[in-house]
Length: 359
Image 1 (cartoon, rainbow, N blue to C red):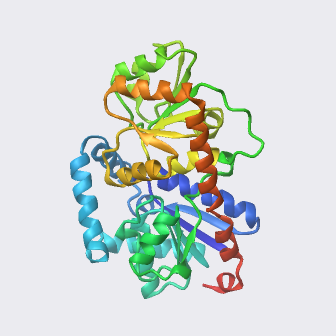
Image 2: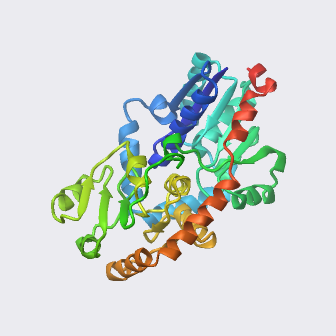
C-alpha cells in the first residue's frame, strides 16, 4: 500500500500532525510505503522559506489581517480561487506519479482543496481530509473527499450540519505522536509548569509574566521558546527556577512531567495536552481558529483562557496549582474526551480491501 501525506508549515501543527500520522501508519502497516510531502516546498522549492516567514510575521503581528482573510475564505469556501493553482497541481501531479498512492491524506486545508481538484480530473486514490482545528473551516471541505477525520464530536456535528454524510466522518482526535500517550510514563511533578508557544514561539514577551512565574512558591517552570530566538535570549539564565529551551523535538518529554501547560491554543498543542492529560491554560487568543479552540477548552472544562494582564495570569496559575482538585477534574474531563476519539478507526479504513485496490 502506498500512502501520500500532504501538508505545509502554515503553523507547525499541520506538519507535526502529518508526521504523527506517518508514525502511526508505519507502526500499523510496516510494509506500507509512506511519504510526507510539504506541497508548498514541492511547488516553490526556492521560495517556500520566504513564504512561511511572511506567514509567521502575519500570524505574530497582523492578527486583524489574518482574521479578515480567514473569515473571507470561510465565507467563499470552494469559490475562492487558490493562488498559483496551476503550479500547485503540476507539483502534485509529479508527486502522484512518483508515489502512486492508493491513499492521499491531507493535514492542511490548501492541500485538501488541491488534492480534491486533482482527483476530480485524473486521480484514482482515496482522499482523506484530517482536520487539525476544532472549527471546521470551509476550506477543509471539498467535493472529492472520501473521508473526514475530525478532532471532536463538536466538529463532527458541524460537518454534518454543513451537509456531509455522517458515514464519511470519523472522530479520531488530531493525530499526535505515540510518545504523547500516557501509558507507562513517569509520575507527574506536583508543581511543574510548561510554557510553550508552538513552533513559532508565539507567547508573552512581557518580562513581568516570567518574573511572576519565577516567584511562585515551590514551582518549577520550563519555557520552550521554539523559533523565537529573541525571547530565548531575553530569558536564558535570568531566573534560576525557570529552565529555558529553544526549538526541541522532545516536547513529549517535558509535557509528560508537567502538571499544567501554558500555551497558545493551537489544535495540535491542545490534543497533545489531552493525550498526556495535562490541563491547558491558554494565552489570550488573537487568531480566529485559536479563539474556537479556546472556547472548546472552556466548554469541555479541560482548561481555561488566561487574561492578558500578567499579574492576573499569575494569580490564576498559582490558585490552580494550590487547588489540586481543580486540575484533577480537568484531567478526568480529558480522559473522557480521549475515550470518544479513536485513531484506530482510520487504521481500519486503511486496511480495507477497497483502499488497497484503489489507484
